[in-house]
Structures are given as structure tokens and as C-alpha cells.
Figure 1 (tube, rainbow, N blue to C red):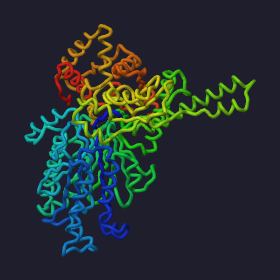
Figure 2 (cartoon, helix red, strand yellow; figure 1 turned 180 degrees about the vertical axis):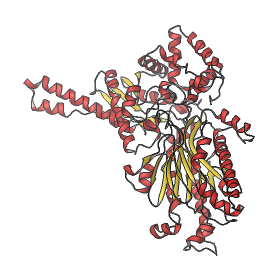
Figure 3 (tube, helix red, strand yellow; figure 1 turned 90 degrees about the vertical axis):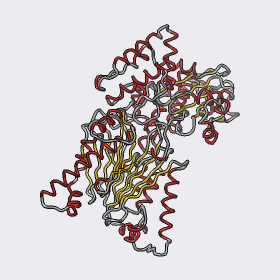
Figure 4 (cartoon, rainbow, N blue to C red; figure 1 turned 60 degrees about the horizontal axis):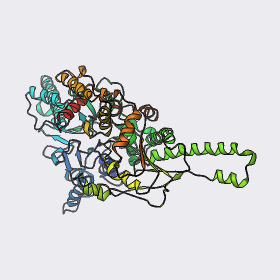
Length: 632
């Protein structure tokens, strides 16, 4: 993606099902769980580089012995930083005078992070906050072991203000009005209540305060707590948690917006945000890794019993299609094929734009995540060239010489590595977008491979704001002096804000929205903006289920082609000599390529939860009123 946007988060959970001595004997180390956590987190670093954290729980520790450890970092390389701290702590203890490295029980009792239950998190701060306090996992402490709660997740709640107000009505005093805090406190509230009820019941059965604790562990119903806590959640989430005594869970939202995959054998239970991560780290086949179904939780009790529980009635499945287009690593077998298909399906539009002139066209991609869709685009281009070869041979078959046949058959699709991204330069200038001259050099180009009679076709994953295209890529491509520059987005036009974890919260930042506004002006219909604003304002205060997305009306009068053509105008500065055309994937083709991930609200305005319509209307109100604030 040429535009830099923050997105998503990644979770990693590991529950060891055997005693630590087992892993020491089989794998040669009592640090087996920690090693796997490092790999799971590092292989998901693409999902979040603003911060990282890890928490661990030791089972069956005696009173007075530390059983919870947590470390977080918001340094430039947070995963490496937290494991540097962990390793430093381990090395210090293992080299001390009293160290008993071969005594696994001693290691467990004396060395931090050596436990059986682990929860890790990598984070992008979609709200722009990157303080250490904002980094997961979050910890809710209590002297009762069962009431200690650790939470981390990949999520955004659209109705956090409602959840916050509900906590206040319960008599709580949350320390912040952010969804990470409100979600944790909501779970904690029902956890406290369930533990209290169990204790009162056990007391009537004759249990003492001491003997009641292990019985609470056995009887605590995690699914029941999650059902109560999540009853009013509106958002996309893969929510993970651990209780102090060792119970753990991962809950997925009822529309399946945020991803979660799991694997279980007799040694371990694993959950992560991406399937190939689990496949690689544990060397298991694709069929061994299951997708956690929407509205369900995978729950592991202290004794290791693991079950999949229905927590929330599932909605229509709307798994995030951006996961397939861009966010998830392309090493997933299905995602790889889907990205190739996205490139293949957009090729007919490209052929139309270049008048089927594959001979005088150079195909490339904007590094690096668009490379897979580029392969699909080129395969489709090769199919077209093969058709052209066949037509030429048939047309000339009466007078076809051997030399001419060889000439026809030897023609190839021209592919080149055109755009080269200077990552260090980009890092340097991101804090000051006004330095246009520096922005223009974020990408460099390969000279000498494009002729003046050529079309230059460049594919990108998606075009969100178009800033980098306008200020950098198109200008740099124009230096090669092509006849035409065709920029291809393997994703459809992004018309609406996201509210489930991707940092696309403001209408005015979307180039498709800007294009629609310009078209309204061109057609003397800008008054529609006032009408939509009034309709959005009229719905303020309504229940989410009653709110309608009126922002759709801004786009309703225009075809996709009209908006794409206007985007082409907006992204082409006056000093660009080549003709510039922007091509977008169609929504229908997106669904063909990614049939199991139909979440497309950022393209269509079809939000999977009731809170989405309120958010998009609020985003439009903010735009209209000049309020530079998030809509959720």
C-alpha cells in the first residue's frame, strides 16, 4: 500500500498442556513456551510496530510466590526490546550463585516468565496514542488469584461511550474512557461477580475460605462471564484473556470481522491472528489450523481442558476483506491465491485502458505487498498476449515464414522493477507532510527500461488518500517519459471510514470522497452535501439499530468510472506530462476473488454492525463542521 495507514493488531496465545519437565526432556529447554511466543510475535510484526507486550502465568504457585509476569515496550523495535528485557532477566537469574539450571522446578519458581500460559500482543495505535500505558496486555490486579485479569486484543468498539457510561452506572470509576479499559473492566466486573457468587455458594456447602479457592477454579464458568460481558459490545474483535489461576480464552466478534486461528494437540493450545504463523512456528499442515468461528470462544481451563463455546449469536459473516488484500502476510495459501486473483480480475480494465497494446506496455508494482497481485495481473496479460499470438498466426497462416513465426512466438510481456521505496527516507519525513520535495523522493525509479511510446502500468494494493501517488509515485514515473501512466488498485475505491481497527476514520482523508465532492460541484449539485448533513444530524441520539447510512447518497449519482476519472484528475499535478489514469477493482470482482471474506464496508458503506452507520454519519458531520476529530 503506497499510502501509509496504521491498522490491525496481532495476538499470540500459547498454553502448554504438559509439565515443564516434559518440554525440557523432549525439546531440551524449559523455555519452550517463551521461544514459541517470540516466533509467533515476530512473525506477526507486520500487524503492529508501535508497541508490543507479553504476559505469562505460572500454574500452581504457592502463596508469596510470583505467578504473573508482564513486560511491554513502545520502543522503535518493541518485540526485540521486550525479549531483550526478558532474556536479561533470565540470564541474570540463571547465572546467579544459587542457580540450578537443570532443576526445572527451581527455574519455574525463581525465573520470571517461565510458566505455562502466555499472551502476546503487537500493536498499531489507531487513535494516535503510543504511550506505554496504551500497550497491551492490560492487567487488572487483585489479591484473589481468580480475580486477576490480563487482556489483549485486536479490536475497536464503535460504542465505547455507551460501555463507559454503563460501567459508571455500576458504580465503577474507570481510569480512562478508551475501549481497552472499558472492555477489561466489563469482563472484570462479571468475573468479580461470578467469583463472589461461587464463594457464597461454597461457604453454604461447608467450604472454608482456604478450601473454597481450588473449588472456585474448577467451577468458574468463563463462557458465562464472556456472555454477560460482551452483551453490548459493538465492534470487530479477537479478544484474548487470562485469569490469574490459569484459565484463558480468545473470543471472536459475531460478524467475524477480526481474524483468529487456533491449533491444538496433546502438548499445546495456540491461537494467533494469522494461520501461516501457526503453521510455520509449530510445523503443522494447513488443515491442522482451524479458524475460530464468529461469536465463539476457545476456552482453556486450568486443568488443560479446552473447548469451543458459543458466546454470541453470530451475525452475517463479514470478515475483513482488507486482511486478504493487504494486512495479513501473503504466505497463507488461500490469501496468496486470492491476491493473484485480484490482479487477474482487474486486467480487463487495464487492457481497455491500454487499447490491448501489450507490446508497448511495461508492467510493474509498487513495492512490496502488491507483488502477489502483480503476478496475477501479469498472468492475465500473458493470456491476452497468447490470444494475440494465435490471432496473428491465423491471420498470416497463408504466408507465414519460419522467421515470422519465431518473431510472433518470441514476444513477451514486459515486466520490470520500476519503483524502489526508500524506507529510511519515509521514516524521516512522516512527521511533516508539508515537505513536498522530500515526499516526492520517497520512491525512486529504474531508468532506461521505459520508452516514450510505452504505457507504464503500475499495480498497488489500494489507494486510500492518494497523497504518496500524487506527491511521489506519479511524478517519479513521469520522469521515465512514458506515453501513459496507468495506476491499478487491486482493491475497490475506499469511500467510507473504518471503525473496527483500521486507521481510516475521517471522510476528508479519502480520495474517493474528495472526488465525489468535486463531481457534485461540477454538476451544480453541491447542495446535496447540506442535505446529507441535515439527515445525519437528525439521527443523532437515536439507537444504533435505527440509524441509516446517509453518506451513501454522496456517491449515488455517479458511476465508478466517473469517480475514478475524477481521482485521476485530482492526483495528477500540472507539471506531469504523461496521461494518467487510475483504475480500481470492482466490488463484484473483490467478492469473486475473496468469497469467504465479504466485509466490504469501507468500499460499499454496508457496515456489519449497527454502530457502523452511526460512525459513518458522525464522520460526515465532523467533515461538514470542520471538526478534526475521530467519529468513534
